[in-house]
Length: 268
Length: 268
Image (cartoon, rainbow over all chains, first blue to last red; front, side, top):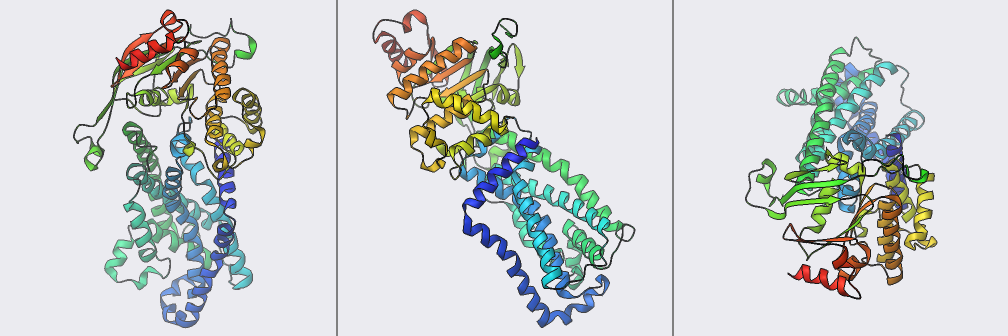
């Protein structure tokens, strides 16, 4: 299993670095996006301050950490479908799946590079936050933060695996990715706390794991909230993770079986 | 013969000799569309209609037939890449599923699209080797051995895959299947794109693999002379059914007799 994951990692590193400019620009764009929020904070930061009172921080620190966090866990939501589609277009999907690799191992290997790069981006975010934007993370509760990260990453990875099933079966047109891309950021509190939203939209946001993930992360990071204070959010995330993870792998295995039955694994 | 652990020379013990039997294999490709996802659609394209087949260890069986007769579909079913609608396949007398077939059977298909075009040929082999559990060192050792038998130029190993000639790409496709040392080897038009010298060397190598190492080989080609030269038995498939079997005396007729017999069987 480790050998197969390492093989995918090495292969993706070689392919990504073969597009040299793209690789460098990808790394640089991590920071330019943040500059936008820095100036938005300068302009409108005070207007949103009342909504952030519970988090013990200002708008820029909120959106900076939410974006960094969402960028990381969002990797799970987006990368399965993206990598699967890339393999389809290259014509290598069927050849890779011809090897005796279990679906769960294949899925892990397929996106290992994306998670590694997302970790690299997260480190850049943290370094830039501390040394460039002078953000204060001294209140952070790291054990609680680690639990939030883990449960959020599993929940989002499961959503991403569901999303990849559509790619496996329909090739193009991915309603799961459409929902994730268009509603998670809007309703989940990534760019502003959900309390800014009208009540009926806040009701919808309660059904999204990102809402609990962002809130728990912000509270653990800025206010040092611990397990007791975050128990509702952690419980919601744990339920999402426990329910979605096995279901998503089973759905992928079923989609794979269907594609093998129809002979469409090599199609794009 | 089930296994040859007692009688085979030590260097051959790695291979598990396998008798492959296919019983009543039928396959119809679904017509596509939304309804096919729930199994409610019109008639599809029939590809195989009750194929029964036995591949004995230590034999090279040829498979000839016109375009669209079902040769590639049959190979893909035997390799566990495509699920059949009816029938089953057994290895050494034990009914096996697609995953079991993917472990025991190696399939070499034509076409470079199943490789990562931005990686070198060697990087591709190392990647696919790892998916089959081979270490980098083992893959490179086996590649070196195969390089001699397949006539692969040393400099081609370090060329990007999209810079290879079609013939060189075909040799690497064969190398990818052969390096697994699977007991059952399925070769779909393996000599296509090979020059005469490479083709002759490859034919000799396949016969040796079969006779010396006990591999069961199924070999497809549109060239009757090639089938007569390489195979000890040739099956003809038409419209998804095996319609003729040519064995020793018919195939080994003097001069072009064997090839003529195959051509006549295909045209019947």
